[in-house]
Picture 1 (tube, helix red, strand yellow):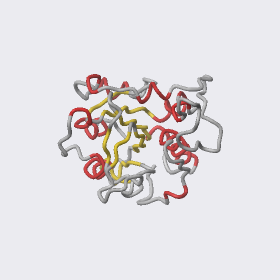
Picture 2 (cartoon, rainbow, N blue to C red):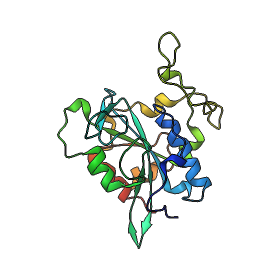
Picture 3 (cartoon, rainbow, N blue to C red):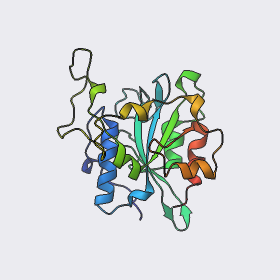
Length: 217
């Protein structure tokens, strides 16, 4: 299936600071609306061991270049072929870039791997196949409460997401990642693993586009 050249971001549910839940609902809506099959979607968690990752062209930024430091961020990548060529798309509800953007433009403008960063800001990407994410992900939003139990950011109005097996919270398993745990090489085994591993696979900045180029659409 093929996404339209552009979509109306306002048609998708968005709660600031709850990007993982926003992407969960985005995946469900894209599938329910017949835009794409779930098998072509991948949820990508971006973070590192320091919980300091820069992204550009983010709506929450107060700078002209849109740069912001997140502790983690979540986007959706769609595998797509157009006129016989692979044109992968990124759906990021928090970005000022095109919605969706091509993966190539999102990487070059939003991630900017060519921008020299100190090691503490190096990004790690956890790639999870959407069908597995929709089945196993759960969050009771405990990470959004301070030590006194107050909300640090207003939660969504709908009920917390519970996994199909009854798990009520495992967000921390998805966002815990380290640069030392990324794949040494992107190959057939690692690509196959993303379709079976509940927590997906970890790749580095230089491997992100290569990884998706190895996935058949």
